[in-house]
Length: 436
Picture 1 (tube, rainbow, N blue to C red):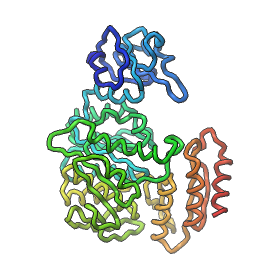
Picture 2 (cartoon, rainbow, N blue to C red):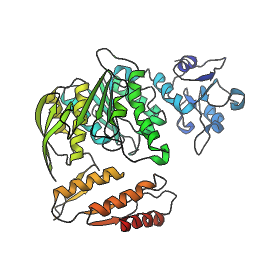
Picture 3 (tube, helix red, strand yellow):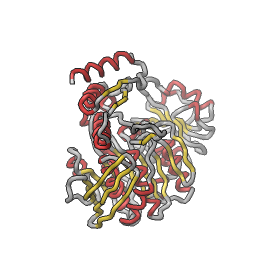
Picture 4 (cartoon, one colour):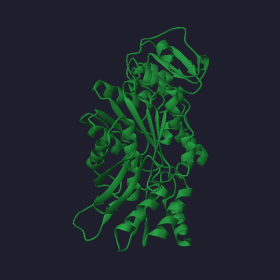
């Protein structure tokens, strides 16, 4: 691809070079990993301005550069284009450089505060049960055919070049569907720009990431971007743009108001929803649930536990249905889904008590986890958790209060404090727990 051709995919190009270049390697925003023949994207970051290393990128083999500075200020020795926002342009450039691979796939995006990873895994297994050749990109790993690749993130959506690379590999491997866990950071930072979504799924929306987004409204707007992308992206033959919304969530109406070809709803307590749970029973070993799927009722037995996992199953059932999966494939996929590591994961070493590990890093997730385990035992509930530094400070107090309310014993321990004082984090949480 020629550099000038590549620029056609970028929004808000302010200036183009008079020259051109043949692009033979991937786009990169890190000059240390740039391959000769690639394009370097420079931007003003929060802690580092990578325009300062344009010369090093060119020396490493960059044949062209995209940045935010005017050409005369960038002083670039290779063809240079100026864009208004390099971070937002990166995803479109990466998609173009890979030949827009998502246009050859049915792409299902899963977003929300809690339950994204489990729901993503459920949808993936439902697609496979229906006979589709499906891939998956989650915050834990990328699955392409029989290959599992650790994304090394575990907290957020991969970078735009990585996403497009995974999607291209899926197309080359003959896959037809992809499930993409889509975080608010990934949406706000444009990492999924250039992904042509067909189904958007909302799990729920609660207090989280306000340190990054600034307000709950901004956080909600970032999540809503996934749903707005449905009508703004490439259409594929015989595939409708479908929004899947949890109508138990207080923000459901906001998401239902975003245009889509079809809207599917799910609920654990509103039987008027398209997908609902008619009855269920959960034990430490698993859950039995009868699911209503657009008028068809079937029983599923799964190793996943807790009412919130029933919500995840309903979300996945609706997404699978939107992608063309029949009711029996939905049940088979749910039953084939193993517990996701770190998500209500039962630890059995022969001990005389029940031990469960869960990635409950938000107030809502902790509440739901403790409510679930309370229903599974008549004995004491002991909660052990911490809160990370340089993240939403308000949730520390909320999580400590929730644990004081629902657990018999609360043990506050270290989670990565980053540059904050661990003692200060724990003391603040302890005071909130005692005040409760």
